[in-house]
Image (cartoon, rainbow, N blue to C red; front, side, top):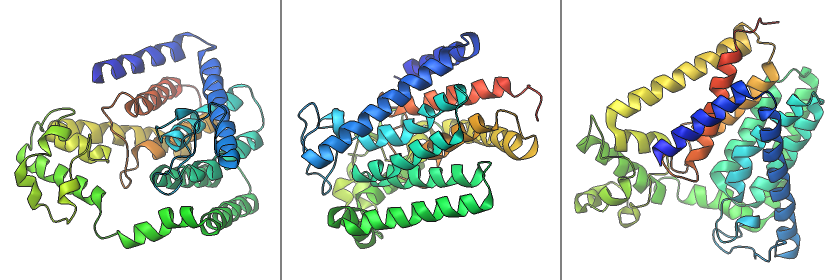
Length: 320
């Protein structure tokens, strides 16, 4: 699976660099899919069934899955792909107001899916986009205030969403099943410091009886397919060897963003800013995440890296 994802990264990077119309077509397809998922989720929200007949899921209070059926991943799909989709607006030289409109529409939709982590990260990244975009200070303050007030109103006006986003995190903040995953990954790393336990091995190694001694009353729920944090996943499964490489890669990417957004001020600033916001969603360390080495969730990381290295190849263009 890792080799396949790396191959996809190379293919997309090649197409971006060698096929002039690829980035416009690819981002437009992504945007179309995201808008379709948004429409389907709204149908499901108001009519309790989407256009394919999938009903609202009862898990986690009230989860909207849209066209994904019994897979509660609609929020993750939108949160991780909408920024990529709005690149089509940049590539067709449309006004930034359309980017803001789509990103703002995405916030309540992602929240309605009741996927907590991606809702927080998507909303945060949208705020980052607004703050760093070339808008007047007055417009930035208005938009930020609008988002904060709108999000708080949406969450507090819906009992099930409020329970999932506020009440449960406060109640289980000190100890929960995610903490059990994190602690187990940490212990696995301590037992396999240099090379880790092996890619996709967490689901098997976590069953070892000695990990019942972790400092969590949810020790019986310590096992999952992955630790729900890509940094803990990488350090526990690949050890220091993989983790150091991963950290150095991310630092290199952050230096690229910092240089081209704040120092050189690259003329492709809007494009770089959008990809940076997607990078924040995917690689922010303080969040629960899907698996980096999985087939479904892992593809988002590799597509993002394809666009990052494509932008890097364009960075030789003279800055404005």
